[in-house]
Image (cartoon, rainbow, N blue to C red; front, side, top):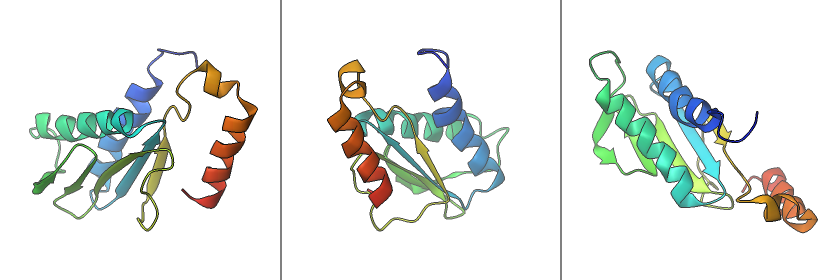
Length: 124
């Protein structure tokens, strides 16, 4: 799909809301080119769950509400990080990768693409 067509809104925002509504014990992990961009989507998911408590059964745990990592009252939740970030040692049921490259320069760089692919294969 072309840029700005709603991929991130659908996959990084509303899909985790849907997953956690149906399986609140699920652990959703989201990676992006940088931690701040990934945390933006973690915030959106957390806030949407809170904003729609009248329609949803899933709840964000009151003692776990950071934008980059938070839990549901059922033990699931969401963890976000930049590519190469601290995913090692964390289990998850769903891994989403949204915008793994920052710009066209990185996308056109053979070296960057090889490094990125190597990280995916190694699990970090």
